[in-house]
Image (cartoon, rainbow, N blue to C red; front, side, top):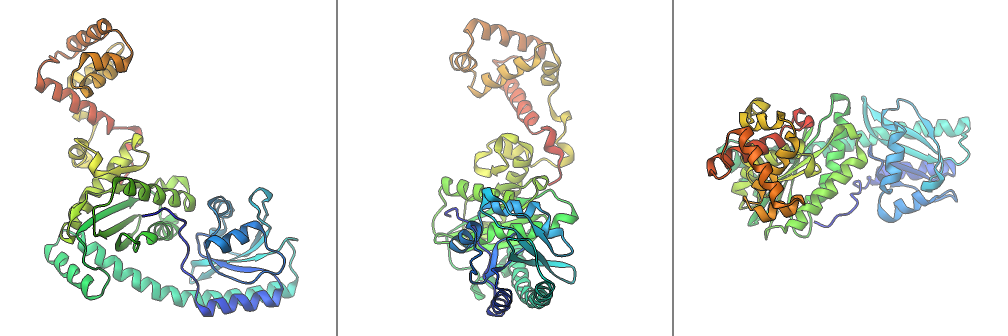
Length: 415
């Protein structure tokens, strides 16, 4: 699960021929990128290469800063060609950009390096004709690719779905089609986005770009399913994944999505439990959904939730959305919060409970004298009417604090 830049799938020989023909006619460097500004095809140089172009050829795609800059120009929403300015700090010369569209769908971007930002009439005509041919070629190729993605999506969704018979049939189909091989361990990761319909198609492309590189690695094989604003990565492994591997994979996926998408999309990642055998893929998936919900509700998780690290929160997060409201917070805890100095007393209570009622550890963590701690604990008992030496009372308060964590201001965003 080594983190790496995810490249676009290389273009077909037919598309490459169209790129080369246009470049020779213009005497300029030409490239075709996918909608995420990842290189698909490129021509030879004509003495107009810049650091971004050279880096792209070496790495298979531009670095994230250059991609963010080009996307920030709104090129994926353009309905007609135009120039983007160069950026000396990025090593980028000006480019003439043509959105490659077919039947309203953005298939990619045709980019011509034009340092002087001026094109003659014949050059523009040649670019327009070439763009039409490229769009038609890419549209046909996309239909074939979408068919493969649909088959893979249907298989993955069946494997994690609630229907036992459908899961059994999917396991058999995955083996017969060689999409899945024998493996002892399964892990499901879910990515959820919060976006409107206008960002949906670009979001789907970004999800594929972020996840596709983890379908087949040296240590895992798997499937990807993109379904609207949700993505599922199902991985099979010969050994359980190390926690550091899982954390690095999730962090890299999140970083890729931040590169390709507007911050308003607010991606979160949920990692399911590690299980033995494909039969339990659905269990890992259900746990991943809970972990994604935790990532949305708990800012401290930095947008990544892992089922195996959630502890008792995993139980609370399985409450239905309509039930997870402030009304679940026990009345004694609400009374404490509303009291004078309630924030300080609530923090003291949380620290006390998290240290299993240890006076020395609590006082040390809070940086206060034990006498002060005892005074605060007496205040808490008087305000709440609960006995901190009573295990049931402690549990009530601790669960109330945990529920309060799940009621963060952004927690009501739909998942």
